Length: 154
Image 1 (cartoon, rainbow, N blue to C red):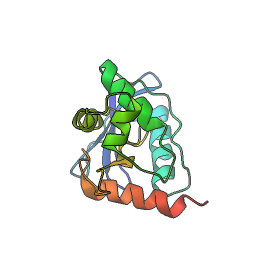
Image 2: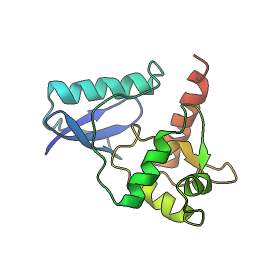
Image 3: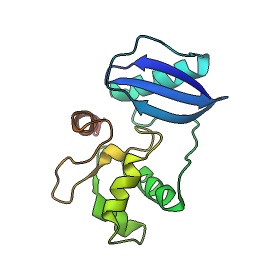
Image 4: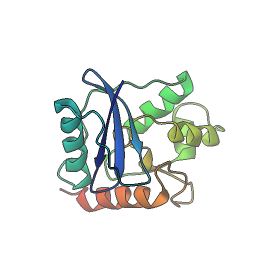
């Protein structure tokens, strides 16, 4: 697997990929110094993410693979159906996948999401509307939701 590192306008990230398929995107805590193995594909992925972060695009269209348990795949598939600029609660996702009492497990699946931004787990919030539980940090979750709210009408 190849890894490329980018300092995006939102946060530093690691893009892991094989051939022209994204295997994972990891949000990093510190600015990167080593660029890893950048290629035309990883640069395309970076540009697509930057266009999303700047509000120029509402969808990130890249080839990716979701590797996880059957439950995780159900959760991620449900999250992919949340429209841009909207949010759903962990409880609503649990109900949608017919596991109404599994909202904590939904949170765990969100935390294991291998392709944040593409599978927009930031759109999943607490039942009371609070921003809770985002692997990249609540501040990034708030920025992403705020960005989508601003650009929702465009």
